[in-house]
Image 1 (cartoon, rainbow, N blue to C red):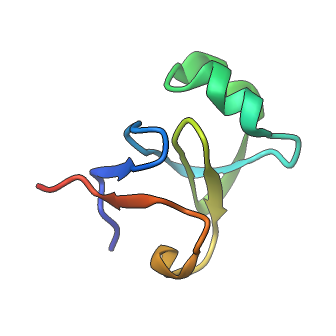
Image 2: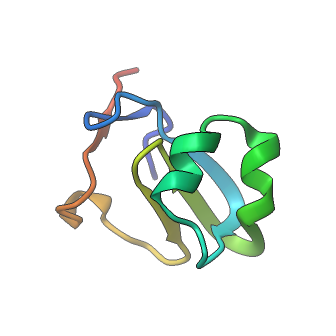
Length: 83
């Protein structure tokens, strides 16, 4: 299970998630800074992968394809935005 209301405390953006996608390896900070949260612009760097999930805010991004505890990633500043 994952929270669908994640928010980044670094950039103050809501974390977007995309089921069955990963981020292309060429993604970088400027790509997300300039294109979040415009899905039409983000799609150019999304790779279809069944069972995976792509997460991104304006300053961080992750592609997850197996059970992962995101709280152990010290670089992420994502917290539950409350339900």
